[in-house]
Length: 301
Image 1 (tube, rainbow, N blue to C red):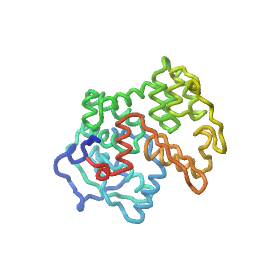
Image 2 (cartoon, rainbow, N blue to C red):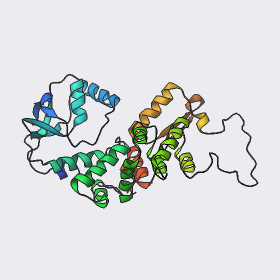
Image 3 (tube, one colour):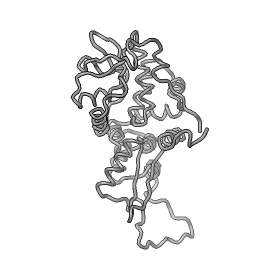
Image 4 (cartoon, rainbow, N blue to C red):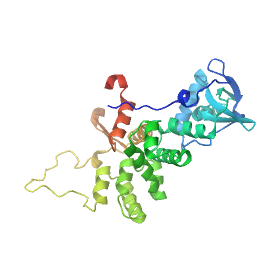
């Protein structure tokens, strides 16, 4: 697998800190404003709650990073920690203060750090890539090099912004995946996309089924000539039929989808035997999932 290289805080913001780890300043939370260039629009409430509990039990282990701005401070990184600290009732938070950070650096840092986060939604990534191109004047190739992805991946994400608002909402909420969105983009008009997307969500189409419908094919591919239809025994006919609807399975699917950023399907049988299906849409997405599930040491070079 190819190694993906991105830049972090140290590479993007060289120079000395006003306060560094071990000697970080305690800054009142009320004086810290969010990063105006933050591409993330949705923060997982469950994740914030878990972080709040950790802060209450162990304190804040890593300072946030801020820059002085207009009599207060603006976050460079650490918004989840700030939100969780407020929820925990803290009045101040340890912070590293960076001097001389320009708006362009703030934007670049916010985007590069965030588009590589594993829990960023496809649409948030798309908005981040688009902002990098528009506000930093970068090409798709340059954006791809900066975040360590292939240009095709950046292009596929940016195309999501061409989707009708209703479909973008379904994508943000996890009702549709990146694979569904790519298939819908092959349709000629926004009206056709919306009509098909509504049915896809209502009937729980897989990505492959959505692709077939977008090509105008029937729901079930034609049977192979001479093939004998199989007679079902005690098992359901389709994967969709055997997806359990018990609350804990639905909740676990939702949590895994939020964590992995793609559609996850759990098929649970007796004695907790079953399988988990995780969708991916291209090689880059597969590599992203592999890095989340298996360490680089286990994967090898």
